[in-house]
Image: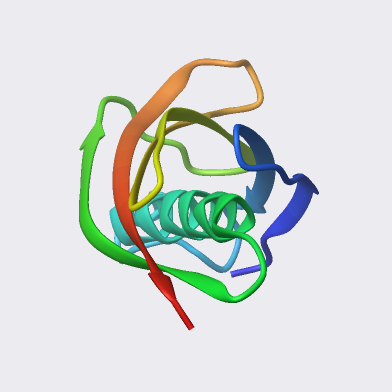
Length: 114
């Protein structure tokens, strides 16, 4: 996928991904690639919040795609909506190089003891 993680924390994370190599058959960035990017950021952020001896398990994810992109890089910003003892919810916004919103992804993770 070529994802570069730029910043990682429980409450705020940023990553970028090239469109090249992640296109679907008509040349657009694949919707599933948006979701992979969002889930990666949300899950890592949840795992950071979980801390040592605990891990995060995704229990729900959804995505709304509002614009397509055919080249360049996309940047995803992940913000915590809820950082609880047993559940976390993060919202991830994927934008193009002109900072136009391409998709909005929300993921909920359950935190478990190892």
